[in-house]
Amino acid sequence: LAKTTQPISMDSYEGQEVNITCSHNNIATNDYITWYQQFPSQGPRFIIQGYKTKVTNEVASLFIPADRKSSTLSLPRVSLSDTAVYYCLLPNRDDKIIFGKGTRLHILP
Amino acid sequence: NAGVTQTPKFQVLKTGQSMTLQCAQDMNHEYMSWYRQDPGMGLRLIHYSVGAGITDQGEVPNGYNVSRSTTEDFPLRLLSAAPSQTSVYFCASSLSGFRDEQFFGPGTRLTVL
Image 1 (tube, each protein chain N blue to C red):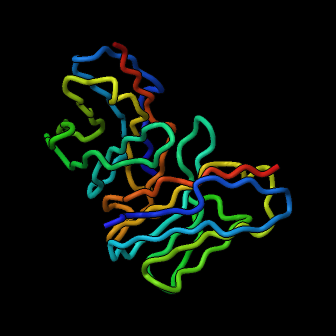
Image 2 (tube, each protein chain N blue to C red):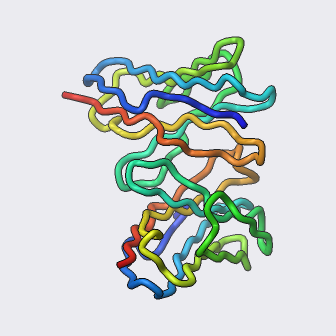
């Protein structure tokens, strides 16, 4: 069972870069790492997915070291609207994904 | 595309009542699923479907029924509502599996008195 561990909460200030690290020591060879974002009173929204090294899109970057035992979601120059819960997800042995409690990111002015 | 739609947005039930939460998607996705989210918690999978006519149980299926007669619709039925089912319910769809990007609906906030 691939389990993920991420900080329960983080605070940052507007304009800063925010990095949220997720540990997944038992990741399987063919597993991709997926991050979702959830704003209050909304359903989760896919942010980014990656397998190794670095993936970048218009919202975020995802850094995955060679051993793949962790991954870091990087949000450049955050704004107040980035306040949300961020989930790091891996499939479990039944090929479903499990949403843990995620990381509550609070952006301060 | 409307994406994933859910109705109603809010619902209050009395213990023992039954109701159906509606979910529809217009993206021709094979996979659809229902989650519940309790305050301060992550989402827990209730039931899912890999295609029309096929459904299976998730992590917390007790007290809920589903059916999938069409690709577009995936209703969730509460048979006899209990206060423990007070939660926010999200429907999601994906093209061909949980490893694909999942698209979530706006949620239904259910209170059972």
